[in-house]
Image (cartoon, rainbow, N blue to C red; front, top):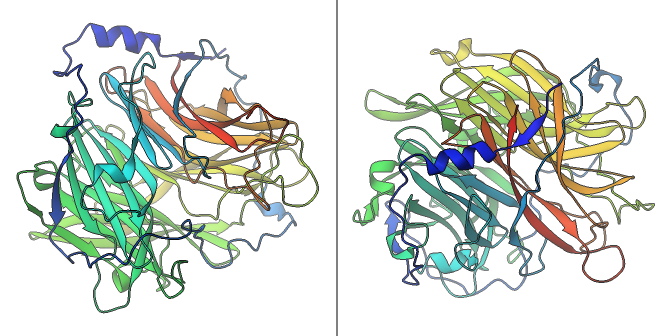
Length: 526
């Protein structure tokens, strides 16, 4: 019988190896800032007067209650449910009572970098917080006062031993992107941090756009940031979706704050169309681990209302020039996941939670296996009853000639009568596939889960990380619950994985509650 155990061995092994120099005294000096080399920022139009609204592809809320039998997930005898040992620890709290939580993070040699919504903080492996959580917008002193900051993304770069935190921000008239680079060993010394400040709209002469839902990935020598671009026609609310913007940096300049202007390469508009000529939506750069990759692989879903196709993208230097190419890997019937149920489920949409709109939410490149992974939530069925929101994942073998790439394996993670969504994906050093996700049902409050799939199989064994203590209701209508989670391979013990999720907590009154809490865990499949 398999079981998941908490990564205590990883903690002990950390103590046995040399660790980066680390200051125990937190510095309050501001991080150093440099700027991007394309499209300088325009003067600010003042602070936003409302929150940035939920941004989705047109039609993403048109979800049918009908179940297509072709979407059923094949079942069978899977592994037995694993057992949880010691308790995980809480990360960044709901400091500003905003929704959704958007938990993200990554694990380095000695610390976790965690971020949720508009705050970030470092924690050691035992869960001790290094400093009071910092507001994202305070990290970039080039941002105008009062901007709304949102959608943080985090990774740990094992090739260069750096943490990277990217986030977006916006005023009524202007959008920004900030990339914070933190050398390992300087977690508590902000004066050693380096921040790239840039406009969120890097394409001139086509009207103003707001950069939303930043996704970030990296290779051995580059970092790539993608955003969905929306019009400003209805400011302070965003307008229609325009296109995906891809921004790529060389680490040699991005990680070096003595470089005043960081050269960047931009792809957008017709360059980021799907192979069939339609506009792509949410292109996800892969987080990399292992090998020395120099081509940035990315993934997206091309959904036409009934069929979803997995699209493979590649940024590669050809004859000294960075080029973007793409190929469709085919697909099949696909549908928006149904709204999620949760404990104390009531009639109508007021107690339901948002499970997503078929955008991919995570991508991972395993350099040792030579395989690429991607995931999202779709409509499926595990129990033979009502349709559920289930996690779909793909494994891809990218070929040297991109057109020869193909899907080698795909699977689903879920449970009868439960809705699962907002997955993140990665492999461990043994080639086991891990998915971190949110789950709930009419008999289960929203909770943080993780599942592991053995090499060569498609059935997952899942484990509960932390359950919620009440029904989550932030406001009228369907509740937003995260727009992502995160999972990170431990750079010390590569059989261990760090997960970053969230759960609702009682707010002192009767259920429901509007308060959430980030949760951080380290898991291994023993």
